[in-house]
Length: 316
Length: 230
Ligand SMILES: [Zn+2]
Ligand SMILES: [Zn+2]
Image (cartoon, rainbow over all chains, first blue to last red):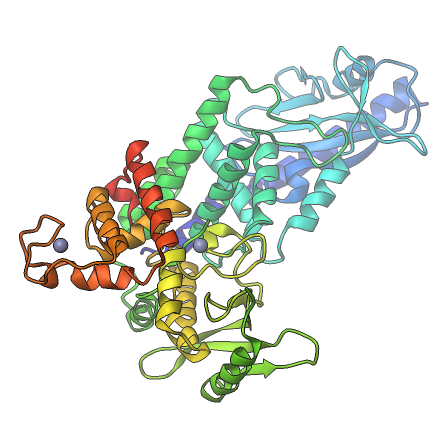
């Protein structure tokens, strides 16, 4: 019955974006904003970019991957109707940021990505908005699509608890997917699944118990219907494109994690329990001490065990 | 069937004398209830924790348990926490256990002491340690686990023999061999357990026999590791 809560605190500190990296990333973000503003002033003064940090950075659920990479989404907004295609508008951002990093920026489907090799990536999704109509995001080789990134952030802010337990659990789940790789779901998908699961349970003070409880609720929901709907316009299902292999891969990983999490909670030795968590979270999860736990609580624990001995709850 | 409200009220008055943190509420024209704090104490009498609860007569007290609700938001309305999701009441015991306890005779005081307090200790165990000390599987398997525990066997075919024995309503001679195959005398072996289970009605016994037979027929014989409480 090893309580690994303190190991989860250390793990969260380990995968959190450190202050030095964060400082560098903020400097880069500001420099890129400056370049983009200048580029439009010089080339298309009728377009005036505004910026809004969004995504995981905004939700404070960003993590450092095991290759020490993190990312930042800095949305570029134009409050006018563009007279060019979405692809062209994205291309202008590409031109603006090009030359700042050693490698060329990537023109991705829904953003321009600047890669700061070995350190972080800054994504610039591009939007326009006119009065009385929803936000629209530029999509490569297509037109604009309805998409409101603030809606997702607002939704998450309403779901999260003031103790920061949900945020910590989203980080744990993202750390898990990063450790496993192999086409595990995106950070956005894990944020949505965890937030939905959270409303079915009561968050435990212990992070290890809460993580197991969230994993179980995620599995229950996905067994019922394998989908992950973005709670913002246009309500995409992030799992719609998953084939059977990718789905099975995730569901199997989920079942394995639940089974080891159950074992870890019942394990008395802290080191043994920590190794069970490590199987899924990787070696950034700290090893526990090789000792039997809960000695100090023996009196209360034994009273609880005595009190519960005759109870056999059941359920339909 | 409906609950005996005057019995509930008489017993509630006695209950709150022993549990002063609980209050008995009677409002004219409404169903009476008991609510307040349920204190969980260690052997020295020190309070470990307390749960906010509400207890209602339910549909058929005292033939079935009253309904108990946790009202402090400490337990989610989620079947995995042993809270029924439709009504939000606690699922305290499997159906045959509940039936037998009620048939033996319960009062609100004995119910709180022997059912409600252990149930909440188990909830506390789950909260502090992440799992219930003991729990039954959900659904019919949970019923069978109860019988397997009562008959001290993991062999469903023996459970079926003993359920049939109870259903026959006649006892073998006390010094004949027990039907379980143990070679012990019946009275020293399964007689007490069969007598206890015989308090179930024919309809109930037939129901559980059918469940047990279905499990064997479908080869869904429970695996040992899925069976708790041994
Ligand atoms: Zn239950
Ligand atoms: Zn026997």
